[in-house]
Length: 248
Ligand code: IPE
Ligand code: IPE
Ligand code: MG
Image (cartoon, rainbow, N blue to C red):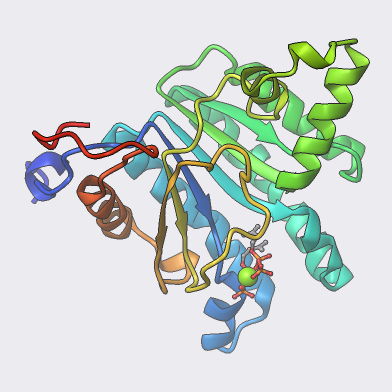
């Protein structure tokens, strides 16, 4: 069905979120189910990012934040941590040129401390190269923790000498790693768990939440469409009463 547009294919998608966050979970279990080492699951998961990013761009999502490595993931066995670090470097080296050609702006959310200096340089170079792109923003949450992000923002605010009266929700938002990105509209978690695991705590205050048992390496275009269909059916009330005519 190559001539079919995604709107024809998924007429139930009536609203597309601006900013989607994805907790890419289930790589280990995906591998385990195939009798493979966990790292093979991470490799397959990394390759899946390209497919989902392509679909997200097509559906008109403007910002995609992907949770790739949490501050808590340092507690995994050293070889798994090293493997995940290697994978990020490989992806940056392999994909940045294509991402740039496709109008993808790359951002990083997370602490740079703890990441090897050459990897930090590669991350920074990818961000600098793609800075002006505006088709979609791919925000990679790597060495990311929602609480660490708020701690870092508060430290930064104090270092900049802001008075207590100047501290507002807008100011804090501005000082987060995602400063400049609108809040998340939709959080997707693959792998069947129902928790945030320290992801986008501040930015998802009013996000819609969608969980699927599908392991991340198997999460494809149709799965993303299913999340957007459910999102289209949600009524976002933001604490207000629904309007009589059903508009939001
Ligand atoms: C998510 O997959 C990827 C990272 C946390 C880096 P997991 O590695 O958590 O996979 P499961 O949850 O053990 O299956
Ligand atoms: C969340 O998955 C972190 C990432 C997807 C990077 P985890 O597998 O680390 O989360 P928990 O341990 O199930 O909460
Ligand atoms: Mg997991």
